[in-house]
Image (cartoon, rainbow, N blue to C red):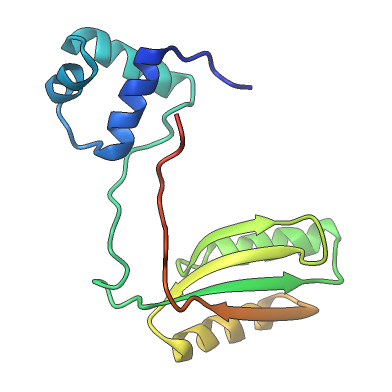
Length: 153
């Protein structure tokens, strides 16, 4: 269910998405308000679940995670126990940046960040040793053209 947001809320969210380390004073100045109303709005949006958490965005290449693979998974298993085991396995793997269940010919897509192809193979071998998978296709991203966490508010 969508939360009702006004223009001021949206301006505050845009500022937080741009740089959540800004002080309340900075955000208030940029959105044309004062500190207390901005703090109250942020608090309300946290309580409503609009703001989930604040975090730092790291540069994967600076950390030696130069390879990004998109992993397409098809399975012939659709039982609840298989899904539980598969999801548990994915959640335990820090290499998995995103996982989506899809409609269509592919059942799942994963975004996996690793050091190199050898590290991807280690990930792949561990995954298939834990969960039966019908077919896996790994696509290496040659260049990241756009990556953002900013939602259009």
